[in-house]
Image (cartoon, rainbow, N blue to C red; front, side):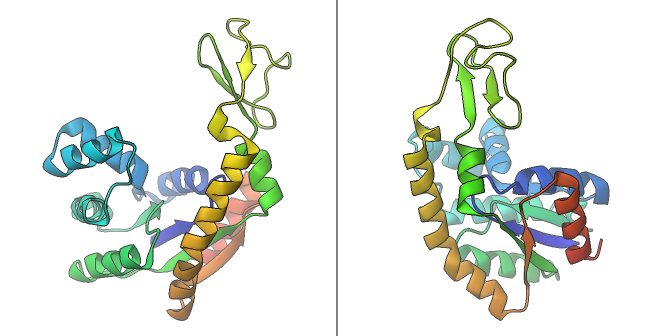
Length: 214
């Protein structure tokens, strides 16, 4: 199976990709993990990626595509994979298609996680962090025993600035504008399938299995 998972921040792509990759015995190719791994190993591409990451800048397409090329060349990717967090643009989608073509492969399906803005806001603004020990909680999914108090050290819990509603809305708006053409790109090629990203994790996972034929 050669799948791409698309969806806004908070849609649950990573959670589903990790579990299904384990279940199907294929690698989970998350660009964030790949960038961190490459930076840690000190490879040429990794060092270049780190230079941008340290500046808080976006890593250029050619670096990300280069990392994806190296990762797809590993033996474990020959039998399939789940890509999460890539592509983000049509240029990246075309680069991925070319990489796969070079390996005599092609995507089976691109699954878009459809989640309402209200649910995304609930998920993305619910994180709280302890000021003292930095333990993370979530008001919905992993709440502290006492509101506003860390279970581990008794420290005060607070909401990071970038977890506030306004910055989260901006992130979601940017994603929507950026991804809309990408969805059309895959829809026109008959590769796009949509899965409802709300509900229990198990129900969503079963919908993905059915969509992917797994």
